[in-house]
Length: 105
Image (cartoon, rainbow, N blue to C red; front, side):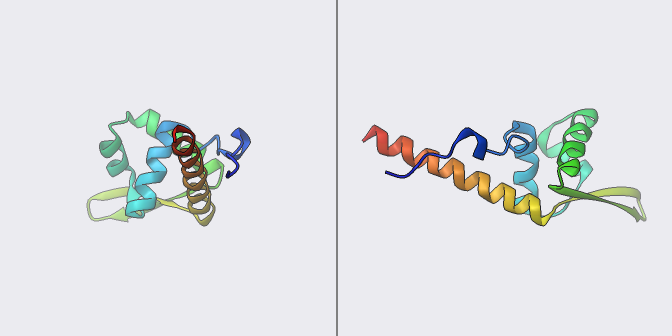
């Protein structure tokens, strides 16, 4: 029987549903503009900013200001730490899922 990950092994920053979805989009689609994330997740700007700020403070994402022909844009991308933390969280969730399926028979 495989060991179930302990609660401490589940990243508290990425376990927040909104931050998990932000990380998922960035992991799957690569760097995206803040406007894309706001529309895709249907978040208010203040809410998005709060979660991006937390992710950046923890070193999981990096924001880059760009000047474009259509005006300034903010690009958001996962850092190496963010990518590794996201993959570790998915792996730990997968272990929990396997244990639940095994327990059900």
